[in-house]
Length: 270
Image (cartoon, rainbow, N blue to C red; front, side):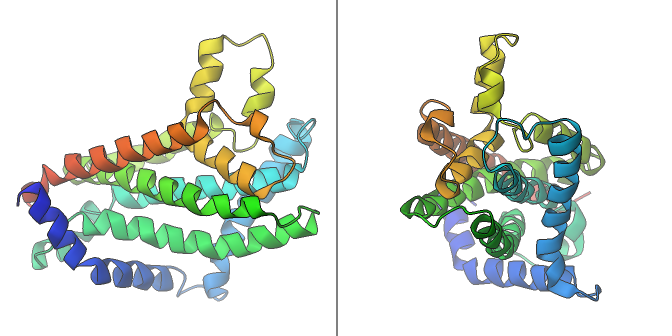
């Protein structure tokens, strides 16, 4: 269908998208004894491992106020992007039975997987709030900034997921490569260390520090840290951070949607 008609069809199936996302989330840990507790435990355990390796052994916590809230926020927000992209990569290739059996806009699948990860993040945010309060981070009006930041990150994640869904539908082996790509991306996104602190050193070229700060994953992580952690100041954000966040969301969201739509008739064939 034409793009406006495709958008209309997708909107008409919004209830399917939300129901499918909720069902996948409920079934994800249905075989585990702790069930949905793993939605919170998994990122917390990752944060504990990163704290030991990077914070203690490598000393990245030095000079970073409220390092544990800083680290846990970074891990939770990064996990949202990582899981969305990984799920999006397999959105078509992993659901061929559904794709071939029913007629619906295929973009519903990567979007629903991103919505599933957003729902999972909401569970994790409850644990994050407890951690922030336990480490003396006060509740502030700036916490409201987390809402537009998450909305922009969701739009970015959905766009990238649709790009990867189209690529994964044509070449399923991409799903095997993505963990290595995402792990590299995580290490340069300031999840475990401060990009602002690194930028103050003269050993790195300015172009490198600008690229690190403008990295979309780092932008959304820093916005959430600025919103939730009072010791993370505006001076630690890259220049024009909200413009960057909106720009990345529009480029990925709109561009990824159009890129996915152009191959709509090929999904499930071959």
